[in-house]
Length: 108
Image (cartoon, rainbow, N blue to C red; front, side):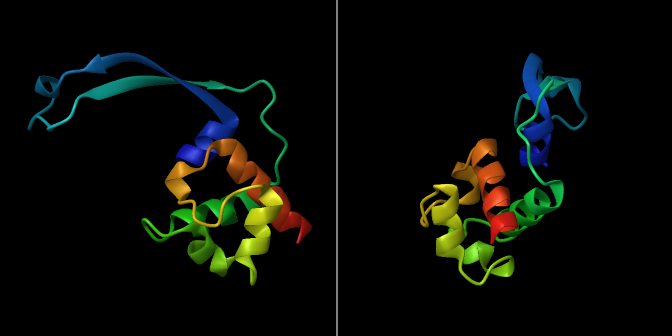
């Protein structure tokens, strides 16, 4: 959700909400976030972006070379085409990296 939201919107934290505002109070501070639509999101095929994002985050803490096996027979080639290291994990990749992965998948 974070990748797809970040592709179409720009997020800005407006203010924090103390744990005491909730019952029961959580052990973290929450924030209210404003999502503003991007005027020109990076051009990207939505289907491919959804596929690579789902595969990348489908298995927690796996390296991309392992988690992308569900969308391609050759994850190292896909990652190389997107300019991403094989040892990277999904949580380390910015939105632009996922857009490059989607374009590489479409071109494969």
